[in-house]
Length: 472
Ligand code: NAD
Figure 1 (cartoon, rainbow, N blue to C red):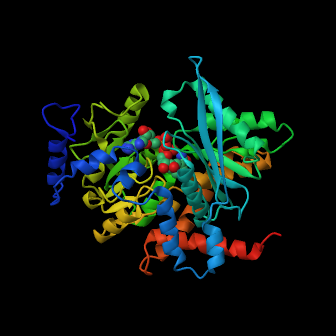
Figure 2: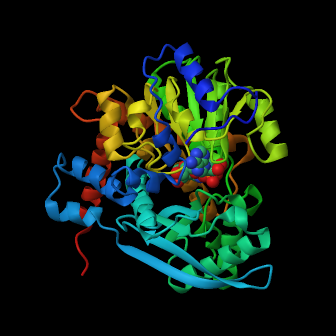
Figure 3: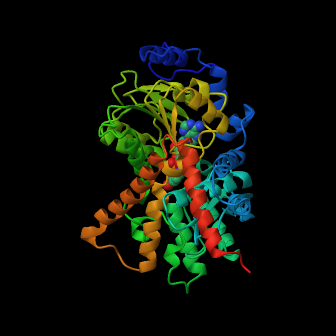
């Protein structure tokens, strides 16, 4: 499928991307447009179309690889790998046009070795039980890597949020929350959701309000969810936290104060992508291309996009496409294959799969999204000497700051004005940088960073299971 150029008429996407590859001195230029066209679909379906394992199978494959190196006994490994609970609910929504629609939603609790369990709520059309369980498992391992004392969970509502009005979304979130309350799948000591793909502070505020209406005697009610607006018991920095964490880890890895003249490509201009871009740009990095679901931007000058101007444009237009300071391309998946130092997938899982991995020219792939690289793609990337910085560490900044929000709500105090910023930022940086150093120390010890991260998580969770014993 040929890609069409939207702006700077006269040249096709193919010509543009060819020129950029050539300018960057890339010898690989047999662009696989068939693969990129397929990749424009939802990540997991594009990957499975190429014979890659599903997202859930991928997480299991990564787990098994690390488990084979662990000193843990097989019975405990089986216990750690299994998803403990998966709840599916279906409920009616009265739509604005008077029709009634059945909404399908999930909550998976992967591991209860620490309580509460914790994990975001996603709103996307491809949500299903397997995706929710895969994401819940990643939460378990992620929390263990950064030593945040939560088990892993995840929620998903199978809708395209862009197709619903604010009132409809509010009704969906409130009904979903009430279903979770009825089934004992939410509460400050049980299961604490947060934002994820397609949700943000507003949805978290609705969850808190619904929970407090249904459980008025719970004095800790506001700690039933994190990622809330500041005025609703949220914490400074939660919105930026995941993207900032991606930046901190990248900086640590590059061990280079100027991570910073590096050329960076980002997929996804949502919460995580935008804040990652902000931090990298602020530190002097050059964002040379951004891929979004409805198209992408390429900076042909390679000097780096004007990020403040782009943010202002995005705020006004609600899209990055058509930004006058760059070239807009329609099919953005080809952007992942442009030459750069660092490629940051910050959208969805399985975006880099066996169909496009061989075309990736980045030296480092920094996984801001959950599960963006399939195991087959990982093998191909590593054969091409591409270093992968794994999601378990890279995007753990969000849950780390969520932990402090939860603590703040339980303490029923406001952090002091003077110390607030320093404390929140300082603790988070310490937690992430301890985890980073731990992981970087494993370099050269016979496994890649992902396996090392899984291994650290497995050993920590196993210790917990061993010491707790089995009830009854
Ligand atoms: P978001 O909804 O705020 O933004 C995602 C963006 O990706 C959207 O702008 C969407 O249009 C874009 N997108 C979707 N498909 C795309 C495609 N094929 N190509 C290019 N862009 C595409 O979501 P988010 O909160 O930024 O989450 C992104 C990823 O980060 C997810 O994998 C999520 O699980 C993970 N994550 C999020 C958080 C968090 O705090 N929000 C924390 C940890 C991990």
